[in-house]
Structures are given as C-alpha cells and as structure tokens.
Image (tube, rainbow, N blue to C red; front, side, top):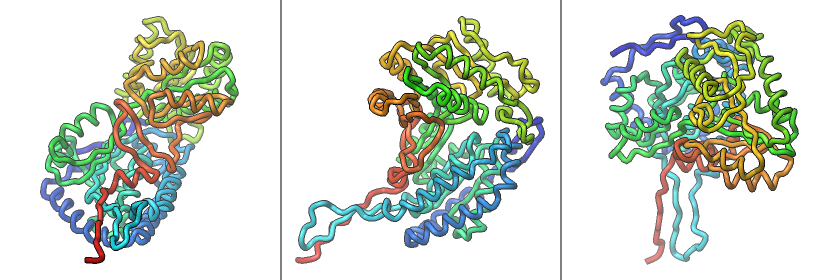
Length: 462
C-alpha cells in the first residue's frame, strides 16, 4: 500500500509520511478497544469526565508547538492561534453537562412496587473519521463526549493533517487514558471501507464531503452501524433593511474568508435587501481588499493558502464560470502579490450580478469566494436561501428578533443565527438537513447520539 503523505500548501514540501496500519495492527487495535471499553463503561461518569479533562489540559499544553505545525499542514495563519479556544469551550461544556445528560430517565408516573428507568448505555467502539479544515475542533466534538459516555474511540485523521491524530494520542497518553481506549490509526480509504463493512465498530462519525458521506453509508450498509454525518454546505446570509451595516459587513467578510473560506459553516452566499445593497457591497469589497495573502507562518498574513492546489483550482473555475455568465468580480487579484495560478495561494473574490444559474451560488465552494445578490423582501430571501441541496447554518442580520425567528423557522437549515455566523455553540445541537448530513453533535443531544437507551422494568414485590 502507498504511504499516507502530507504535503504542505506553503511550499509543496513533504511534512509527514506514514505507513498505513497492517491488517494485524487493525485487528489488535479493535481487540484492545473492545477490552478497554468494557472496563471503562464500569467507571463512574465523574471519573470518566475527570480523565477527559486531563486530556484537554495535556492538549492545551501543546498549543505553542501545534500552531505552526498546523499552519505547515493545512495553511491557516499562525496569527489566529490555532483552534484551542473553541476546543476548550466545547470540552468544558460537555464535561459540565455529562452527569445530568447521562443519568437514567425516570417515567413521570411512578408505580408502587416497581423500579423503572431508562439508562444511557455506551455504544461500544466509536470510529471518528476527521477532516483537515478544523482538525482539532471537528474531532473533539465526538471524541470527548464519546469517552465521557463510556465508549472507546478509534480516530482516523485526514492525510492533510496526519500529525493531528498523533497529537491526540500524545495528549491521551499524557493524561493516563487507559491503554486501548483511545487509538489513533493511519488508514487508507480502502482500509476504512473494509473496517466499516466488517461491523467491528458500533458508531462512525464522519465530517467531509457529500461524496465521502455516501461512501461511508455504502461501506457500512447492512452492518446496522449508526452514523453521524456532517457533509457539505452552502451557508447563506440575509441582510435585512434594518441591519446595522458596518457590523454586518465586518462579520460577514470574516465569515466568508476566515481559514481561506475552508469552514463547514463559512458564508458562501449573501442576500442583501435592495435598499442596502450598494453600500453593503462597497464596504464589503473595501474590507476584503485589506486581506494579506501570504505564508501562514508570517504574523502579517491574514489569508493563507488553501490546503491543496486542486481546491484553489475549483474556486478559480467557479469564478470564471460565473464571469462568463455575466457576474462582475469586484476584487482585482493583482492586489495580492502571492496570488498565483496553479498554486494554493488564491486571492479572495467578491462577485455581484450573480444568480442561481451559476455554480458559485448553488454548489459548495469551500474557498475564499462569495456571491452577493439583492432581494426585495423576506420572502425572496427565504426562497433563495432554501434553493440549495445543503442546510448547515443560515444567518439573518437584523434589529428585529421576532423577524429573525420567523424567517429562521422557514429556512431549511440546522442552525439559525441572528447577527452572527461561523460559530458553534456547544450548548446547541450541531446538526444539518438535506445533503448536509444526519445526526447531531454536542449539547445533551450529542450524548444521545453516542449512547443507546436500555429500559429497566423491575418488579419489587410478588
């Protein structure tokens, strides 16, 4: 089998090369996970939570090493400091609610002579297939609560961020997590499919493309393995006539271009009330021109390269296709010295005169490009926001909370934001609709996804 290789988007150099695990090593890992999980499930929830908190502390202690390492692997500028603020917030929140979320559910109608309850039992072995764009945040969404709930975890990380899996293992070992309970394994796509088809894992959580999600479903077909899938997105924003213009512009520019647009819930299309359209577009384009495209290891860089040249090529093709159909590009790529055809260094782009006949407005971009359209009213905005096969998040920019809720109820999405975007609140379920996926992470509902109900109906008198 070919080695798993990480190539840096900074300069094309090889960052890491790893051998895929052998069949014997995979079988050994599964056996170890199974044995460790049986004992771990007997451990009180409070002790499991304490162990995961030690893991979190061990991971946070690695931050200074991890930030430049992550930039080298996938290109995010070091000035943003990695992912550990959100990482810590999510782990701490899930730890705080673990005991309450995992306690038995009692019937509302107690019956004399009977003890009845529904316990939350761990699933067994949870298989996490993590992506490269937010390699720590996306993985910990499942890993931390899965362990707290009494499961074992096997992690297969993306080739682009292969070192992240090793950092997870390093922190788990430093925290004294029982041997075999958490294991990072290097697997090819073929090995991953084979493992899923074997039925040896009890739950799989995958974050990635729609095509990848379909491949996961096919591989696990017939095994009854439960699935959590967070797939593609084309997240919209709607700027109403009563929105605070400067605030909306500042936040939506960041929502569109942070991490070079490689965000699951990044803003990819914007609908602006016609009364604000001109000033909004002018301010949006002016702020976009202030980005500094360059080497992510340079503190002055605010926009790094995309993770791979082929990702940048897709965005360039979307832009050219849109322009050929009448779109106007507001940003001159020549303003950005690092912008180069054939490389992952791509200037941000703002398109107007766009419509839904253009791929940039309906197909996932996952890069630093956004299309902006005027709309006449809320009804038009809702129609356009729903004109997508995806549904992860949608943001509404307005001074009217009631209007935001009314509009939000009509939008086909997993999360509705008002006056913010591109954020994950761990107290709320992270979920999607349509082709964006199935299942949910975080919040008490996240624990439900990682456990199974077991009913106890105990008659105490005969």
